[in-house]
Image 1: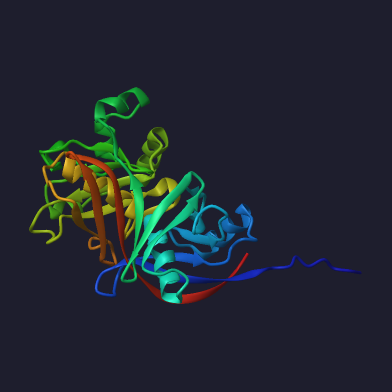
Image 2: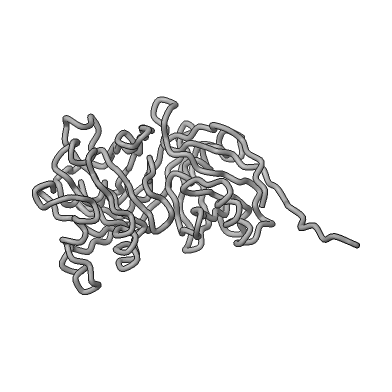
Amino acid sequence: MNKTHKSTKSISAQIVNGFVTNGIGGNPAGVVLDADSLSESEMLRIAANIGLSETAFVSSSKSEGFKLDFFTPNRRIAHCGHATIAAFSYLAELGRVSDGDTTKETVDGPRKISIENGAAYMQQFAPQYRLSKDWEKEGVAMADLLESLGLTESDLDIRIRPIWVSTGNSFILVGVKDGATLRDLKPDFDMISAISDKLDLIGYYVFTTDSNATDKDATTRMFAPRYAIKEESATGMAAGPLACVLYDYLGKKKDTFLLEQGTFMKPASPSLITVKLAIESGEIKKLMAGGHGRVSRSLCVDY
């Protein structure tokens, strides 16, 4: 009697920490090079088997320097900051990209990439904002948002209300009054996921500018359970919106921001994200978010 065996394929992947600070910490991403032959379903299976918040699949592009596809363990995502920095830092380490400008092709258009002394920076668009009064039309009350983080009105930064921001991916940014409040958040992941569905969010980016909590422009936490990410230690696509909020709403009129993330995770994984704004006549036209990457290990992944 013949038995049919299902064949299993395998592929090499690197785990690269994006946005490391002084060579440590950062946010680990899967990076799969030369992914041209992989189907979308295969990429999803590989990302699920790697099990990190995002995996970047790098393949050739007819129009740009490289084609990048991003997957969380449960779905495709249009862009990912730390996986982009991880992928291009690794490409730079291999000598497959040099200092200067290149581009990436994504499912919703090309993005500029810059390499500076081995650090990678990714282009994001000018910010779009939606105030909290707009959310009520979509069934999200401020009380629900606060409850989903275990916050009260008195916990917020009095200078700014929670705000929807997109520079390519959309997030709710929530400013809190101090580091202790940021540390002691009590996220309700089911509520965050439901609100994220209603407002089509990647997730929440909660921050404080409390100088007792950080020596950077802000320190942050990011929650994205809708994408199977409870919390991650560096989020370039959320750091861009935060830099815009600091400039447009909190009066920090400069063009370069240093943002810290991951210090309040358990275990902590400190990350440093640099955001550079392109400003014309006082208005943000575009921005670049980036940092350094470091390869931590190699994997052979079945799919």
